Amino acid sequence: MGTRRLGAVLLVLFACAAQAQEALRVGSKRFTESYVLGEILVQAAQRAGVRAEHKPGLGNTGIVFAALKAGSIDLYPDYTGTIARELLRLQGEAGLDEINRALAPQGIGVAVRLGFSNSYALAMREDRAQALGIRTLSDLTRHPQLKLGLSQEFIGRTDGWPAMKNAYRLPHRTPSGLDHGLAYEAIAAGKIDVMDIYTTDAKIERFNLRTLEDDKKFFPRYEAVLLHRLEVPKRFPEAWRELEKLAGRIDERKMIRMNAAAELEGKSFAEAARLLESGGGTVRAGQRSFLGALFGPDFLRLTGEHLLLVFVSLAASVALGVPLGVAAAKLRWAAQPILGVVGVIQTIPSLALFAFLIALVGTIGTWPALIALFLYALLPIVRNTHAGLEGIGAGMRQAALALGLPARERLRHIEMPLALPLILAGVKTSAVINVGTATIAAFIGAGGYGERIASGLALNDTVMLLSGAVPAAALALIVQGAFEIGERRFGWMARVQGGGRT
Image (cartoon, rainbow, N blue to C red; front, side, top):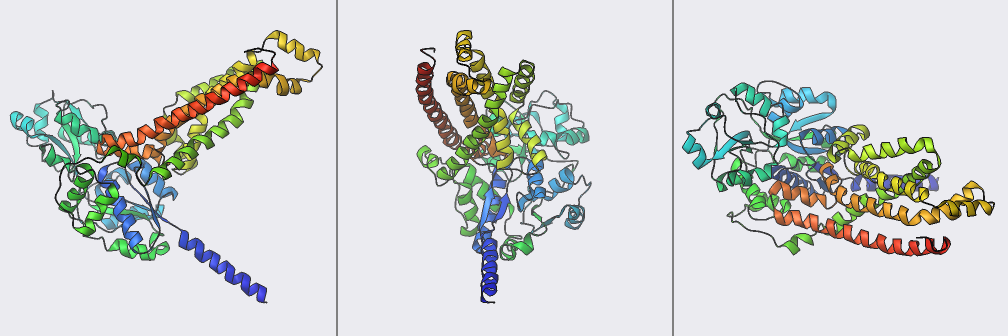
């Protein structure tokens, strides 16, 4: 009886400990305001004593919403107009009740109006707009020569460029997509005339832009809200009560102030988010030091995530790629199909493969990233294994036959050691490729150095970009150097075993 009670107590304690360790997972999209709001939500949960983690810069609306539905994140900040038009295809000004009825079958809901609206709009440089007499979106119809620079998401959204062009009968062609952070620099330099903006962007005033009036009332209201899984209030009641206290606390002025802290002062997103509680100060232009950004508090975490992505996927690629290369060399009929398939995989664009794998796996983050990197690493390993075995001279093969060794023993003791230097060169190539490709995995929430690159793009922050690119490049050089040392060692061993063959 005592043993049973002790077991029951231990089971309860274990369950409590597991629950205590459960983290509230907050997602965000890949633009400044979403990063900052994500940090505000994390900090609110932490004030309630709940462990919370931020999965920043997951991509566009479709990817983040898919992550929410799959349970990869628990909530993220979004906007009523985006939810109604882009996700639910509702027309008109949908209220929260209507939105929640439409979302309920998916186990998702909307709550906590944060207190501000952040609408889409088009903007021009003030001097250019004044010279052409452009004040409204309708005025653009008289100037088909203007060059537009629109973000990729705005071009593809239901409530974006296609519908707006039709509503205003704009004569302009659909432009190539331009990253939102880079568009400000492009319009300041006169490379584009018109860009899409968020009305709470801090750079509107800094770059002296004129927001064009939506005279046909095309855009709906975009009230900032929390989009969450319906079980979140029950799973995290203390955190949810703290999140509800954010209702109405962030007006447009405060949101612009926090955006400015991140974009103009060089503050981290977490530091910008803390201004909501501290009251903030004046905005001044600034720039963080490169070394401070490079060896920031997230350096070890990002390094660990990047190494995990590179070497776990590489190990899986070696485990499959070498046998496939052997099969291609030994089975003549299989060579072309095997080399053809791994070659085609290599041509698939990274983001397209990531998107496909998210749909296939049903989640974002590490798993689809590992699968993608594993697939990309196959070609050099398979091809070099095949080439190494094919390159063994006829004399060496005949000598092995003369020893009376069976085919499996010849492969194991003679052919594979002779092919090893070339196989190792293929593994080295795959490893270096994976170091670079792994940076893109941050766009689906897998972390690594690409997380800084994504943030740098969102902020158009060169220091942040370099703090992600430089360690990735350094890691690639270190990996290449380590493999070259290994190649020299195994190359020497192969020459000894092969009687001087190089």
